[in-house]
Image (cartoon, rainbow, N blue to C red; front, side, top):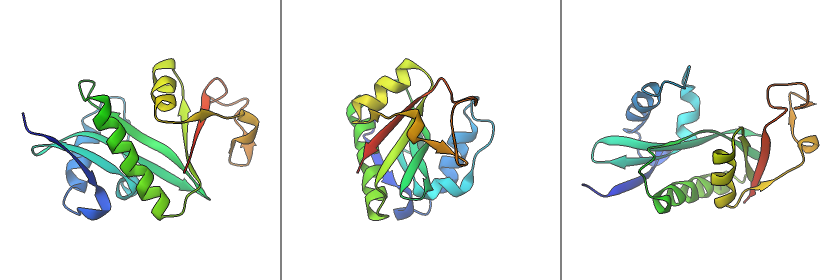
Amino acid sequence: MQELEVIVVEQDSNIANKIMTFLKSIDTIASVEENLITNGVALKQEEDIVGFITYEEYSEYGLIRYFIFQKQIALGKVIEMFDSLCDVARLRELAGLISIGKNQEVIDLFESLGFNKIDKENFLVGGKTVYGTDLENATILLHKL
């Protein structure tokens, strides 16, 4: 088995199409927002994409949008992929990355990456808190850069 390679998308213009194919192959993703791919970091094995993470920029923060990887990927490689994303975000002078956790497995993963829970009152979507939305029961997490 070939070594896993972490690739910053903006440094490899040839990888975007492979990432699109990877994302479209995942049943739980209804549609792929192509404009988010260039902010991301991919995990590649041979010619296949086996992981991807990206964010959408909101003011001085990035909201994690896709964070997908095959279950058998070692946590060390997932951390390396995330650390590379943090480097991309720092270059763009973001203050932090935000994640929305809807289940405990996701919350645990983000906490293991250094995210901390924040008060939902401090998280606005369209100028309003998440109360009364489908995110009301979600956990909002912040990773300061």
